[in-house]
Length: 204
Ligand SMILES: [Zn+2]
Image (cartoon, rainbow, N blue to C red; front, side, top):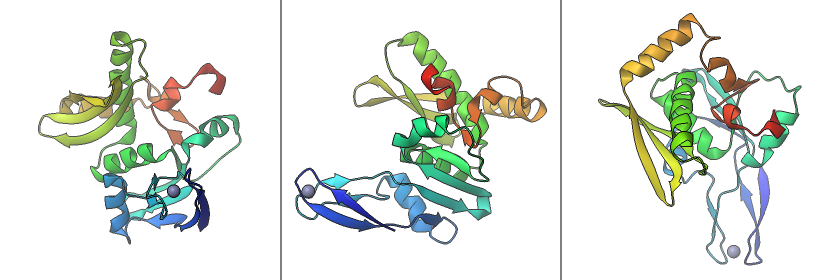
């Protein structure tokens, strides 16, 4: 697929990208997504870095994953278009794509990770009511699951850890009672994300 990019310097250039990527066959993509170089293009005239968010499909058969990634700019349209029924999971924006792929790579249950984010964000909203805070999965280690919260301080993330026991407890709850807790609130059709709980009323 080809796409035209207009650079603020006045240059106009064409990029070429894959509309569908397969993570089993092309491991380089996963690496690029995690290190932030995925779909990153430099203007050949002024050198400015462009990271256009375009619609792509991500297939990761060995992890039983098929997802459509739509640009952050299309978030409102996704909520308004109530008819959409898809056999694919939906993810909105490249940062969320990188987050979800990291969760799946670590063999964690995305519903539980989003649940834990909702707890962290509820706490952050109490402590920093005027801030627009976001929580991201960072990794899992011996001391638990690590999340990074941005938006509290400029250019700084707050590191939060949740013990593995709490993850296991929530996972157990979810398996027994998938309609309890915040679990049903985390999903809108094909889209699972804590963002569904945070969206403004206009998008409900
Ligand atoms: Zn340029």
